[in-house]
Length: 497
Image (cartoon, rainbow, N blue to C red; front, side, top):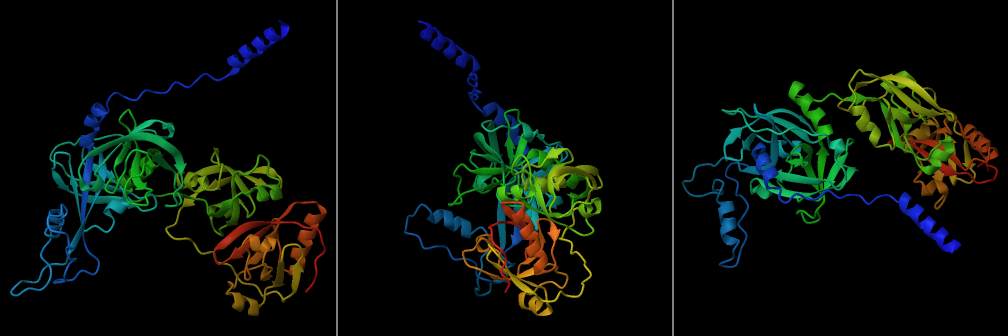
């Protein structure tokens, strides 16, 4: 009996501690009321441009050969007959260059006629028209574009105030929330699709500020630039891209979060361009091996500084290569790719605290942000006389290194200002080869200490071995820039070559 009572007591305690089942939000009986409210503020965008290489009198594409009575015959005939007739003919005047049309979507954010869309929808257009839900067509002018986030702002001049929608807070959108996508798929006109937020913070390699909302609401060609709505009728995203091997929707679409778009759109409206904060660092991801080499607590987090650009805000504030940026302006940097976005969203000229991991402890520095330049800035360094060539093996790494010389600089195409020791040989299958080190790479630092001769590199590595460190952290420079590479330490003396 006692055992039974104890078992029952344990079961009741476990039940009390178990989390209550989540209450799922019921889907609305119909999306019709919301769609009816939002559709008038969503527009179709038509652009026209001359086709590349088109010349007066040039023959256009031929209509494909189709079986008699094919259901596509009338469609293609109508399509190919839309433009001016091409090709030479007796007594036919010269025709203007062929012009192409593309279609996209957008949405009105101000009754006076401010429209938001994607930059790629209107890029290179000679003429832009905005078509309202009632088929009214208005000529549009470009207020400003931002290719880095693929956003654009247009202005139309209506005779009366237009229906408009507002940006919502995309940070409150959770995975599983219902959303509506409205746009102009395949040029069919205003179309509504429903789905959920499938994921947050997606990086689809479109740019340095990727932070996309993923949704399974059907998004197709022509939906680009259209809004993604929450159930309160607020824009929480700008539909921008799809993943599809066929070109059609397979339920994986991506939208720019409204909190990113709102800031960009506001700057484009005010000044026609976007000013972004600039820190001036080259960064890389912190791996387990790098974290161990630096004694970084709490695992792989932050952004490892491979280089603080000379003359940049970070260098002026004292941030160094080898620092790991843990917090920027009181925001946690959980992984490398979040830092560029956080910095870019911070006002130019702002003075912000930056917490870095350096020499086994946290250090706070104050940085005054600059403005992100349009092109990467080139650092100017005064060259010094080259070191005398000396060569040795770095035991256990599979590397042979040498001091820099004019001959090696010419052989590997090294910059005149390059400093360090150059890798002249990599043993196939070695730890160095596994980490993609190659002849011509330059070792700039070992465990955050500058090295200028092979002997200095060897001595730094031997010190790490005596400390029983698992890895040696090398700062490697090549034509692609600088990066930190951890190499596992193996016992054994260096063999001179």
